[in-house]
Amino acid sequence: MRVLHVGNVANNGYLNAKLQRRVGVAADAVCDEWHMISQPEWEDAPLEPVEDPLAPLIGTEWKRPDWVLSPRTWDPRGEHESYLRERVRLAIDAPALLADYLRMRQPYGPLRRILGHDLRVADLLRAGAWLNRFEGQFGRARELFGRYDIVQAYGIHPILLLLAGRGRPFVAFEHGTLRELPFEDDWYGRLLSLAYRTASKLIITNPDVVASARRLELENTVFIPHPVDEEKYRPGPSELRAELDAEGWDFVLVAPSRHDWDIKGTDRMLRGFAELVRSGRSRALLLLFEWGLELDRSRALIRELGIEENVRWSFPLPKLRLIDAYRAADVVLDQFLIGTFGAVAPEAMACGAPVVMAFEPELHAWCFPEPPPLVDARTAEDIHRVLMRLAADPAERRELGARGREWVERHHGWRLVVDRHLAVYEAVTNPR
Image (cartoon, rainbow, N blue to C red; front, side, top):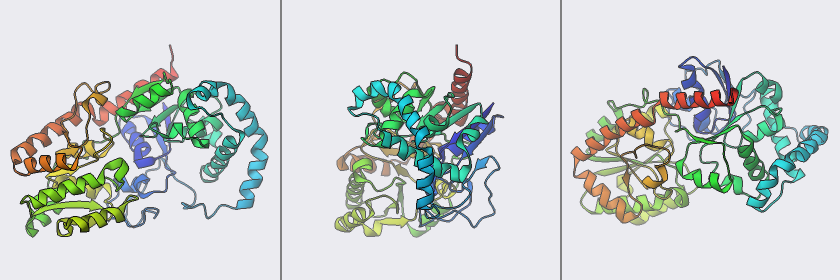
């Protein structure tokens, strides 16, 4: 079986292809995302922290595998695109895009009632412009997709299959993109909602988005966890922890999530940590990373709370260095609003670190046979109370770390993820 993974937000496409190849599947990955956390090097190359999120990750001997399909040119801001050439090609494509519009109006009918807005010709023109840019980097999409038995498209990339899939079955993969994007009153919202409805299967990776699936009246969903390789993410010694111990820090907290107060609850975390420091844990250290839309707000709050000496900043860590940070942590802090997890929590648990975050077990009952041993905290007061308890109880931290590792192995391991994907592919290619 030949499988193509299209789109690589947070390296999910690259990781799924890599893990599937481990069991003999001929899987390739189109890695067309420009952000550093979506480049294969971020996952597997021995990099130093990177300041520019749109920089090409180079400078090591690590090379992308030959099954990674990369852009022909590095062009994250579209600077190599000719405005006139793009408009001419779009004008040439306009009759075919109009035909696509007429073809899609009927299957879009139920969405018109659900979303309250209609599909537009301009939506197809916008998508057509994106498809043209994609083809400028990877060649004719129909020919590319046609070389595979299964095409699995990530994030908003299922839209490309609507235009260039020739009606062939495809699999869509959501990684939080089902939560809000399909309901946006714009071109990608309308086309993404249609792509999710017309996919042969839609893989859900975030348990809470099942509510969005029900709202869209989807009947093609299946749950598969995010790809995490627990053979790579595992407990072990930490160079970072050795350095911090030598400096005299006695309680180390690592918070990898971006600074986005309305999604991650960063301000709650900072206030809870400040109370910990004021409650007698003067040698507690919080490691933060310089990414997110509200870095300045976080820096200002840290100054206001008077905890600058207890906070250490770093550029975002490539995954090999992040594994070392997970191993260094007494506790990993994730996010404190949504009630579910992405990749940070299972990665940290696989490394044996206790995780504190907002967690709602009832959101996960439909997709996990048992909840992970996460420590739930939502308010600054909750976070302070939990951190005080864990700081005083190394035995509880060790127990949580061991239980988290065991849970990942049973319910989130790489082989489980691969096997569930293969079951989806079998159902799509051999329907009964």
